[in-house]
Image (cartoon, rainbow, N blue to C red; front, side, top):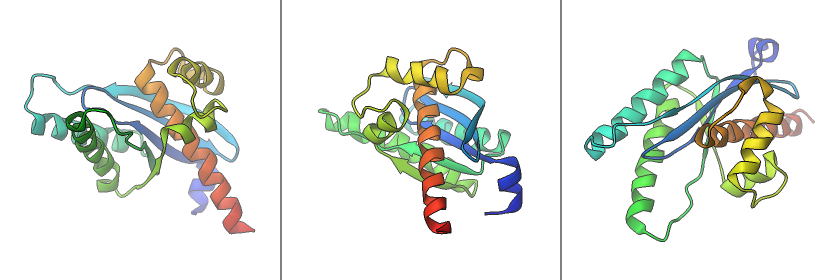
Length: 172
């Protein structure tokens, strides 16, 4: 870890992938403190061909990485739907969203939905309203955050917590 990252904190991009709506959120981890930077949703045109929607996701997330000078990224793992076609399409969207920060030179960590919920809410089966409530408590500067962006900020918070533990384990 460089001295600049220690002094200025680490900018973490959290991503909640989806083909229709991909949530994103950026936080800065400064020791045990978290600071909100930005959040939003990327929504490709629904009438565009599938390949163009994937390209839209890739380019939009790449722009977010650059615009917010992110140092690391984290993404929610895909859960398996009952519909194999939907699961496959979500996997494609997740790949596009995951490649964007990798293309920008960032490491990309992956976390299960249950781990994210447990890290942020304290219960692995929390619902979306509980996640949004905790995001509002943990990052008050973020204001009212819509579901997709709240999930993405939860991913970033989880990464901040778990990377800190990993760094402490390496140091000891």
